[in-house]
Length: 102
View 1 (cartoon, rainbow, N blue to C red):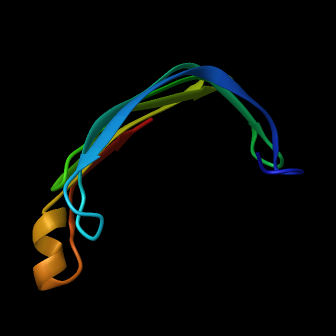
View 2 (cartoon, rainbow, N blue to C red):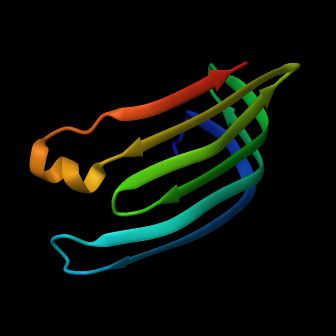
């Protein structure tokens, strides 16, 4: 995946993404889930019990769950970005919510 940086990676991935509409302006919809994830990164150590749940639409990306563990520590986060479709007409979009807890 990234030689020399990612030493190991594993877990269960479920991905269901579809797009409709013209090639120049597709309308995506879908979900992504990772369970039982683990990742070993050079200089960052080994991360385990990784869980991710996310959805995407033409207007938003919602990260409803991000959880990773390292040793006795845990990182949990949620985030959403909305207004992506409208951003094409008005410029850069803004992230509406971010919640990170440790």
